[in-house]
Image (cartoon, rainbow, N blue to C red; front, side, top):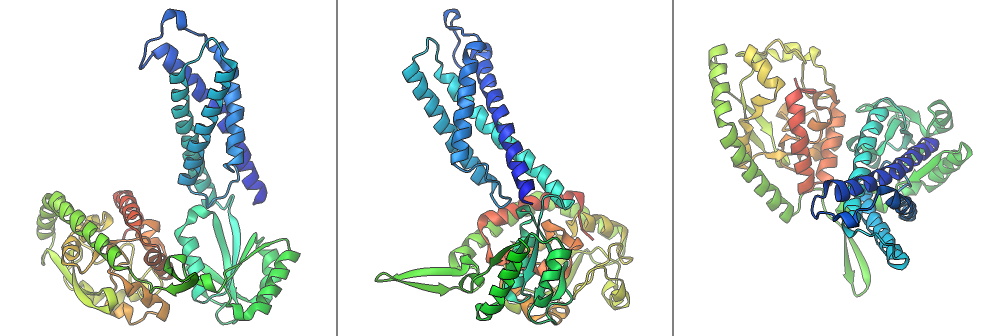
Length: 474
């Protein structure tokens, strides 16, 4: 894995060097050939060969600046915005250094406009190459190339917290080979797609058999002797070990620090939205849901007519669901199945293609002709905009479960009821029905712990292409 990251860093740096020179040439072309902003007098025209040495000087200045700013210390967890900021500030620094060289060298030719163009082109091209690089690396990771193979030690609350963070952020480049626990029973079975590999006594064998790159220990600190033993085992096999300290077993977003005459006081807020967060989220729901109802009202009328003509029965399907805090409400959908479909569910229970308490069949025989189409495109859920306006649901959040499903929840599953359910959510844009129930819950809990208006907007934007191609929808 280390060699792979070094190769990525090397080829990124090589591409940057070439693109800086391409950007400088483009800047020259725009300034002296296209003359976009200000015409160039014939007496002031300068052939590119006179600028080329300065292009090379700028390339070396920028590469040095980028290295100092650690742009090429490649880590999958480094976000695009971090890299963009480094490119922007580094390029500005390099351009200023070149201006200083021009000032002392005092060449006969010098175009400030060309340097402005060069700055813009360099920032654009270097940012673009990173977008393309990240797309390619994402495709490689799906094939298991360039991923960090990680073993999770601990299958309790903290172990699941780590699993949901890794599941929600595939761009980090982690592949979980499985988990172990000091309690052999907890180390068996599955948590979503993640396989239990037994007790911690099997760690040495797992490190060899699974080619593990990294071990994340989530055991309580009271087991410090076991933790130190695990770290020593990792060192013997040249595997990096990381420990989740007790204090930070709770998400940093849940920690609030106050000051009492210089004495820090740490408090833990519950996993729920604060008052200002609720107000912002509700405002977003009201505005977007209202606009959506106006835009989609003609389409909803067409769907209603099609349902009425296609099969006997009501246009809308009403069903009791469980909302925030376990409170029940009536959820609305366009009817996509024939009459009496709910009574047939128990007979089809063994055909469910998703584990856990939820029931889903890819080619459900109860669907009508119109129902298959609107379910494929998630159009059957448009009436839930009314639930959003009523405050029973949100645009984004965990999907509302049936009371019968909640009755089968494990204790940690119930945490997803801490917020209002949503029309779409993180798991819907991360695989939808292709995920197991445990994985759905892990992603819901990650959403609750890491909510922000920007996260809601990202999920809503990512929902659009998922709905259009019908990925994982049934």
